[in-house]
Length: 100
Image 1 (cartoon, rainbow, N blue to C red):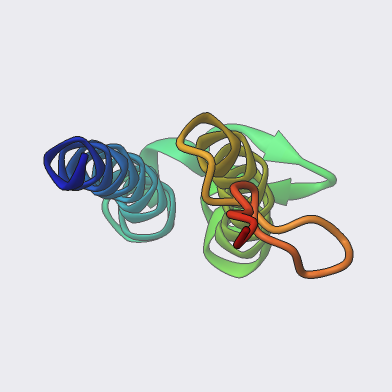
Image 2: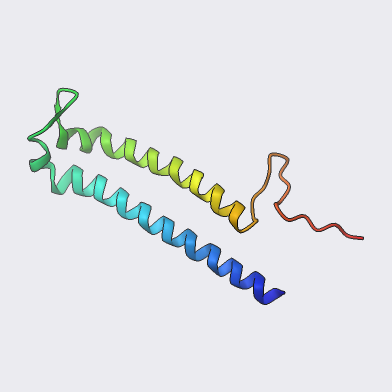
């Protein structure tokens, strides 16, 4: 039984790290790429009356970061339920072992 738990824990952390890596790459591309590297190209387009590159540098990366946070919360709740490590509103874990 302990071997199964350690395999499940390893799979849980592997999926967690994979998700974090993907979200950090997206955040890097949006904040550094769109706000700094590709700003001259993006400035050809307008968003809300402002050049798109300027908008990404000032607002877009922040909004993208907030969106990534909410996506991470949603996805981790699903992952916690998949591996049965969640807590409900009362703070009780998904698997509760009753002592007899």
